[in-house]
Image (cartoon, rainbow, N blue to C red; front, side, top):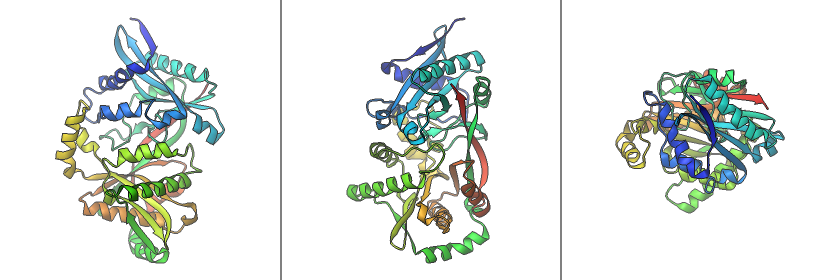
Length: 374
């Protein structure tokens, strides 16, 4: 049987998106993406990410049947920030066949090599500011919002294609029943008083105030993560593009800015795990998705802490732990008793230690980024 790897035209993007359904027909834990969201993400004309990035989609077909897919991505801002020549792969799906997987990687690698890249890294969909990492541990449940999911055998396919671990990303499960150590519970009021902390929610209804707060979040995010491994600052357009999307599903009570003695110190962005509703929408279409969100959102019992950032001058003050305590209390009032803090770089010793020893978090899932020299 003949195998072909085909570089897709822009007009074939929807075929690439819909191919994902072929690999998860009988998987009870897979959460289908919303088709509309995937089309926006991969729209090279409207997604501002592609103003400084390029993407090429590939399909693997055997006798007319799709058996795999991959995307090759260049990110000029990444290479300018880190002064390297790293290209990326993402949106990888494949049957359990090493020949198909290796052929897909070969196509992506050659595309990146032709553009001067020296290393290929992934999976990122399509950047580290989006979904990224391959699930390598913790296959016993559905992914939470904006986290990846894949069959266990993908790791072997990637490694046998010559890839090696670059960095692991951790996810921690937090329970409101034992959300913090006794010491942290006692210290919370002390930290709040000592730093004169105010937790200020965003105003989602007033567009001018919302825009002002988004500018604050953008500043904190880009400053707080500047020295993190693999980090690339959002452009203004990218951040606004993301904020407009997240506003549709965010709970205003779970997003707040932290001020210390009248100065902006940090912020927290947590989202209800709408995957608990969307897992019932196996077609990924808009109207059924909205229906499930409306009818099942009150049953959501977990929120994902996506971003918790503290400006450099306010670190080592206990403010980060106080933010975790505050988000726990806010979630509890909404009836949410579980939280996932994700993802955390394995090299971020301070955050990993704080989540286990201070917040009683359980590291329950691991995601992996891989590298290969080109």
